[in-house]
Image (cartoon, rainbow, N blue to C red; front, side):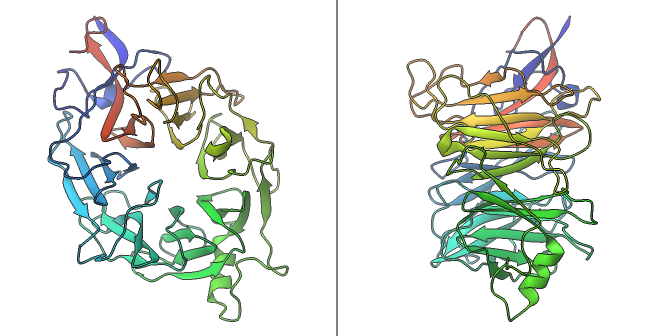
Length: 421
């Protein structure tokens, strides 16, 4: 008999014979089986501090490691076997010779329109010689590309790729301190221009939340989300007489404020489609306030009220990492929302960490989450310190970072009843 179940095996080198991520199935099944690996080919401590999807038809993703600051490319074949990790170390390299450690929360982004390209399509926040920079990587090979120097006095807190106007190419945006940096058509340009947002930035997102042509840019500044167009921002930056991104003559299109005044509102900013109607839903994390909000179908013309996601018992840093993916094989088009709390105690183990997976119905109401944690939790394991969702062979695969561990989950039918050798 074949039983639909949720399986983690890609992070380990032992595989179930019938594993095939294309058979991913049935989110309602609450059985999560897992394994983890501390790769012997990783010479860096703090493995799993950051994760980002590379994309394309292959299952591959980048893993950030803390000491020394290193980025690893993990690639798997069609049967789930992992090739040796490809390492790219920042510090002491010819690319960023004075690169310091990654920010406390490693910030990474990938180009959704350039998946599988040989060009550098993954950006990692770095701090080089006292200045913010982007470490660029080629998604297909893991090779380092030309780094991009940014304006600012601190490491970047948010990075996003996106097409935000009518001009050709994909733009790259990064926020660092009070500065918003733009690399127009990043595949041909390697220098950033900037303007000041007038406050402390956190995260940044490209989303279509207006009826006009092109996507909009959402920037978190001092706990508020400011919405503008890429065209307006590019025009502001190009004007040598102006240094501010927003003025009375050129204000934001709209502003989203913290519903309950959360000071950490906008630490993380994501988008998905949880009710399956094709309109973007915004997700805003405030982990220091133990809060995550979802703004269903939010637009400039018709702004919606944020819905507070129910905080699971024992959570104290809810929203430390957020990822979005469609883990079902149905055709409802509804994404699932993945939220972590790496500081949550599991049993007698402090800060073992947990990950919560929420599914909404057609009205956008979220039910109780599926809860993931290590079956043999450890003290200060920080399970969920990073998250990413990898799209491979038509399925979403969840990758969870912990302290020096990476867990890779996918759903597949296997032979027997819960026979997970």
